[in-house]
Image (cartoon, rainbow over all chains, first blue to last red):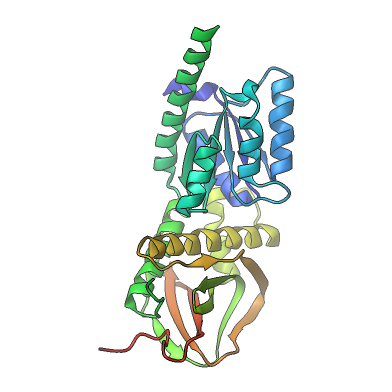
Length: 144
Length: 172
């Protein structure tokens, strides 16, 4: 899907292996605007700064367990701010307890992906997330 | 709640989790070997090991992934590319994350069947030719894996709190 190449994506994970793995998969899907954060604080800072210069991220991948601020806390923080409602926040984590998945969904996660995930499955998820963004933008446009 | 046992069922879950983590992340196929189940002191020898605590009601234990630097150095370029030289920090980071993925998946699969396992946060130990030693006389299982002829191992040690409920599966 050529529209995927227009996406701006942040990968927040304290493990370089995951950041690089996700970057590789996104690049295979022709996404080029990819940035990374190594902890929750850095992710919050980068998402806010991108918004301030009117170049917001379309998708933010969040690990659950990260130093300083967890992925769930990052998700909850931004989901309480209406100006980020068109941003997809996606949990990408080895945390697989059903109660934690429900916690993330209740906090507003757009999607929940359990590691390990194959490049093929991650690409399929990317398309679903892109479609979510499109629907969210159409909804916002219709309310203006 | 089902009690965790060192049996064929657990070794199958370990093999499935290791194969899934390494094939999805690195695109490699690993071959599991014959599990060894025993009791008492045992040591694994490796260069980089991921260790994680596990707890079930009435049971405590550890799970360890023990690899050589050579194995990790063969795996990493498949994700980071050949142009990047693999550092010690990258090796530690990678084994920490592989440990997370493997033991997280084992927990997920077992908990779907009512085991109620909880895991701690993994630690990674490095040092060429270090020993990972089990200092108690309880039961253990070692599952060997082969990746292009290189050996790495997963070790599970359990400490049952109840005298009547040995974590070693009784042979039928």
